[in-house]
Length: 166
Image (cartoon, rainbow, N blue to C red; front, side, top):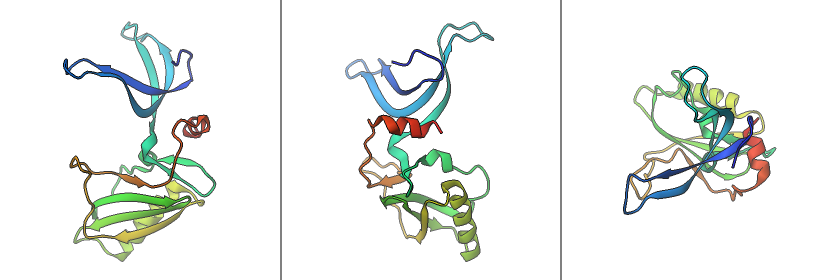
């Protein structure tokens, strides 16, 4: 358990909403930075967490073995305005495929702009291939996966947690 400020720890939760099958110590594979106990402005005595570091199962690996959470390359601007749906795919270290379904308004210039913006976030130790596709399959549960990661990442490796804090 994380007990000291500035330590990074995995978020583990327990829920008793479903009485027949409660989630007990559910490992989320999300990591957060512990700030301390108690809120000075409202007086609550509970844990305070500074920031979530990202989902471990959604990590890209660069050629220099940096780990990049796909949440870190999220864009809060017009980058994806001309893209209907997209997904990152990786099966080789340092090489990422950006699979996308374009909207009618999308053109080659826009695709190159999206690529440049993504590369600015990924860094120069990552190759990015832009691949237009007709469909992006959902999971067996009907959910969209932002990243299909085929590399064998050891999620319990202590060095991985350090990489997430940079």
